[in-house]
Length: 534
Image (tube, rainbow, N blue to C red; front, side, top):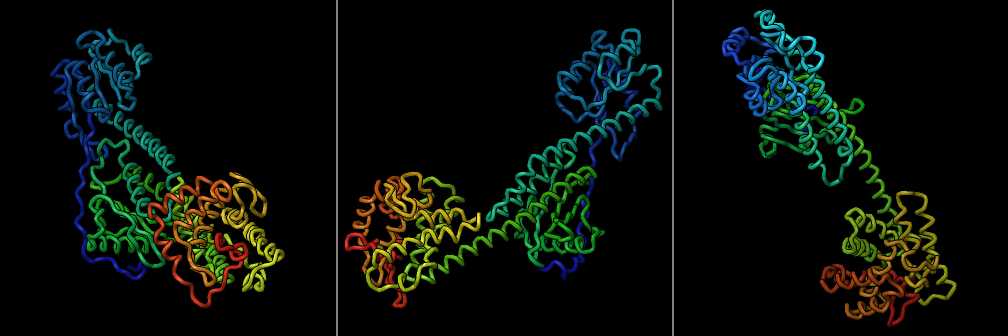
């Protein structure tokens, strides 16, 4: 689907109804008439389009039960002082603030016996928000008191929601930048989950359900990356198509369509005036401006992470292309080992995983192994392609391919692993290899892995100048070299894989006869004998 050319659907979606929950007020008084009069005086009260739900308790003990059941959803409490005893109301205040740890609820003390609980003493020693004598709390003053308390509660809720939401954004921001090349769908589904989680924070169920889509722009094409709720089944193509067309219009015209569902949002994934996609959210109830601000912060982070991913992926592709080109150069220079190089890559990947390397490490080692003989580009053709045996001087020249490969690859820090392979894959566990005569674990792990698989593949391979060794004969040669030529643990692991038939496909591939155009491999032939072909 094209971002620019599509027009919005003419079918207007049904606008969802909005159900706003009421403000909850707790009236605590042992006088039933006072409770009824309070409810009567507040009948029809509204604040910010929300009505009141009055909860009643005839004692401090009953009020505690209500508080335990309703949790933090109560916005305000009108509390009498004298109930079960002279200070029951004040003890209830202490229970709310200290026992429950509820600092959000607005507490108004009202008493018919101010002498028992003097106003100044109560205000100085208790965390209350207002103190009223019942005789002065007329209907108008009650209205003013409740409205003022609810406004204060709303502001505190907004501050707390933003604090918690910001903390949540800061907590998950590092994960937004932990993008994986093959896990974009999971990433975007996680983004949707986090957005929905942010909307729920501090709302006490104000948002009951929320559905959403993340769509990215590939050139002009739109691709759905993830969906949640009713939009999680992306096979519902008609619905998704309508949403995408509507969102395209929104992004293109920079304004929401008139027929957008109530509670729905379209937020572009935009970086430097370039739209990378959009996020579409559908709430069953209207999202507050605070919700939308938090969502926008999150979406900005998501857009920046997506742009960074694309830049990183572009660099990754350049890195892959560099390895492929260098590998192609090496194969072109010495075509006899072209398929050998590709098999070494797969041997290295499988063996690395078997040795306990992570998938990322195994893939890195495998790619690097392709360049183990890249230094052969610096070896003269008359030596590299010499049909007969090599002289000592010619063999010394061949050995220089390890240093040449190191020189070629050292210019790029990204090719550090490949550089290790190129320089050290002819080192031996006993220190008799070249070019640096390293011993044991002085040799980088990747070079020790390539050393084993390089020799084994050469042993079982068909070449114009030799047939393939049997698997048993080749394994015997690996056993013979373990602890001398090869890292014994790596050699043993490869042998176990061979016995378990985990590399049979690679062995069979090595036994196919090369084309007549393929040349001999003098680097291998120069040290070959009927007993040791490589």
